[in-house]
Image (cartoon, rainbow over all chains, first blue to last red; front, side, top):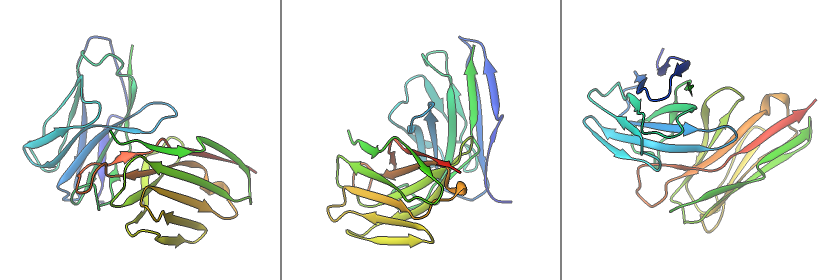
Length: 114
Length: 112
């Protein structure tokens, strides 16, 4: 089955701890994205990557970090510097740039920081 | 920066009634995409519009792209319970930009 996997579905962490969310795709897509969704709101872009070993900040990158060492993987670390990390995190990928290519989304990880 | 607004934010309709959501961008778009997110789910791509004034149909769904390429609409005829969810439009902030700005979304609920 081709697609995007995110794990875990639910994640609980204590305040002050860093946490890494995984995102894996076997669609052979070049581009990958991380979004944050808060209740009743739209998607806000955290980071995106067009190619391996390269990534760019999105609109709300502060308090987050990413790596893109492999084409299939784009993990997101939520650091203790992120002031309000509790949210639904969605990973997506597309064949090429987002402008003219549909994005395929993973099932998401719901992070709760206690 | 670019802003993409959608109205209404919420819409409750009786099953069988029509539904329309409107998307307005503060900048001209090279193209616009529409996504649907079911409750508790993730966004799923519906369609992309590229040409000024373009109209596309998918069964009961009709999508339009404005002549000025700054607005778009999604119209659902005779809604069904399967149409429940949040509908998002999304477009690149600048021509050639490789990221999307998502709209605020319209949440549709159906009264059986």
